[in-house]
Image (tube, rainbow, N blue to C red; front, side):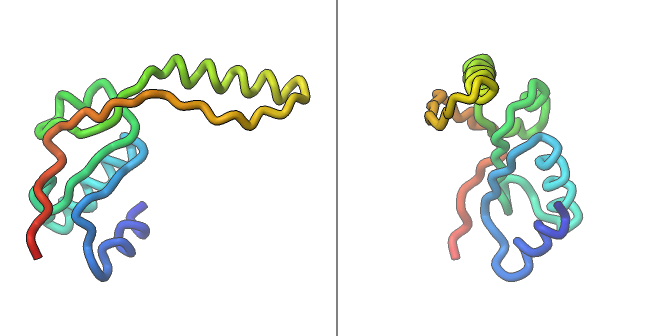
Length: 110
């Protein structure tokens, strides 16, 4: 993770990063702290994965929210179809909501 972030910040540092997991979010904030970069002053962070403790952070973490059960149901249907030898390449859409916390800032002017 740190090598990836080092590479990302090597030339033109990003103003925002979309992060998949809460674990990666923690690693990214540690990386930014080591570089003395603030969230959201210097870099906006959005975590795709939701975690119940996000609202306890200051600032609260911007993230997505969706119905997990819909995703689980679709995965189970897909696995059952594959087990039966039935091809299942259907695309499913699950509505998601963006929960804006305090980790998204204004883009700095160049």
